[in-house]
Image (cartoon, rainbow, N blue to C red; front, side, top):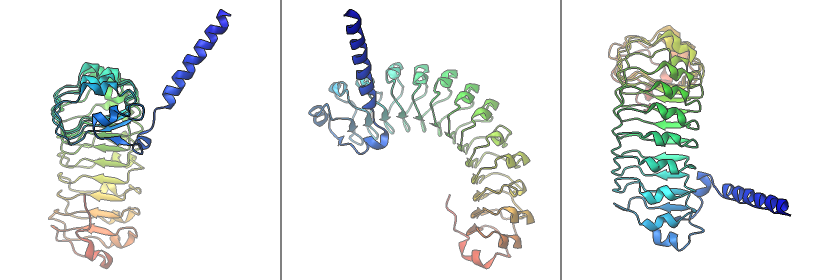
Length: 351
């Protein structure tokens, strides 16, 4: 009898756990739910309140009663005046998506580790200086946005974010990255623009799922072999990085469709000619003096920006061979021999 009761108890517990897990919705599903815009309204509908939108209300605190809203899964708190992530949010067991961009947050509390179901944490546009190690224990986190803060370093424990697919650290004060960033094997989008990086760790070549890499405005100086080993790349942006040459190894990026190298000191784009997948190329503000015959090989090219390369005087007739090329930006050059179908498109590319 006792054995039967024990089995029933275990089955009941498992069923309860299953139900609790099945109640978790995707972000798209949650956006179809009613979003409560006051805490009072949400408290009056506790069992129904899955989405709370308190964005843009000038809040400096939130009511402690928020901790009673155990069904909350998505919270919008952008555009307020909060200086911390309130403790009452850290007591919400079902919270999956937390948006607190553009506040005045100076630190991420250690108790962030309590949000074990968190999938998206967006804290862009705050005043955060430190990434605590406890944040890196959030093994279900898929998107982490820490852009436009004051972060100077990352902990080695970042390797714990094994589910991460998108990481935005742009507009910070990073001078280097830990080699452990190469352990984030599920990363697809990595944004590191506007930092102070002079190198990237060779371990980043292990990021074999990455499709978007943004490194603009870092004093990198080169496109090194770590970058050209990221074979799944679709978009690479390295504008204003002090680059003078494009390495031949860039041809390894067989799937890349978009590349932005504007504002560097590149003299020739010849290594790009063999990249059959390229659709858009931005070479604005470099030191190109000619467009070589080889450009005729770029059969997928749709948009080419060569603005502000003052030494270019001639664009080869091979452009006529590029049937997909519909937009050519060439202001700030002395280029002649433009195919008639492209004459009207010299300002046609927006980056």
